[in-house]
Structure formats: structure tokens, C-alpha cells
Amino acid sequence: MKSIITASEITVGTQLADTDDFLWEVKEIVNETPEEITVRICSDFSSFRSHWKVKKDGTKGGLIKSFDKTTQLHGIK
Image 1: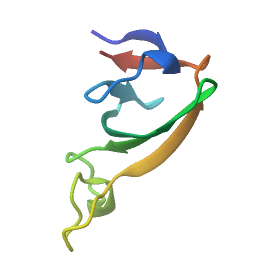
Image 2 (image 1 turned 135 degrees about the vertical axis):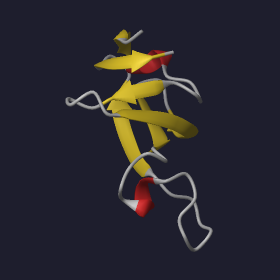
Image 3 (image 1 turned 180 degrees about the horizontal axis):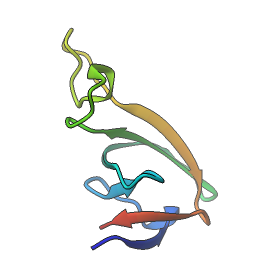
Image 4 (image 1 turned 45 degrees about the vertical axis):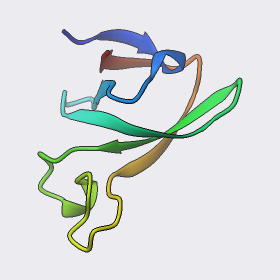
């Protein structure tokens, strides 16, 4: 069930929802400081291959996103 979480609660496996409820899965914590968290999010259901966990060429896919740890997000833990 989707709920409001703060960015400080993000862990690998957390699912984050876009404004249209499209779900992204956190695959990696790229960097974390006391104030900010940077994650790699992927969706193998996206029509864009660059958003998949592994791109066609075998490299890591997805998007890198940074959040202030106090940011409220729609997510599933």
C-alpha cells in the first residue's frame, strides 16, 4: 500500500511513485550524507530501456535522483 514516507526512510527495495503512480524501485544507495540521499531508481516496466535495471549494453540503467532527507514522497517500503 502506497503511503507518505520521508526520504530518510528510503532503503534498497523501496518503491517510489511518480505523480501518475508509476512505480520506481530503489536499486542502489549511491551516496548518503546527514542531509541528503542519492539513489539509483529503475523500472523494468518502462518503455524506455535506459530506465531498466540493466541497459541493453549490459551497463547499469535507471535514473540517479537526490533528495533532501526531509522530503516527503509517495512510496512503498
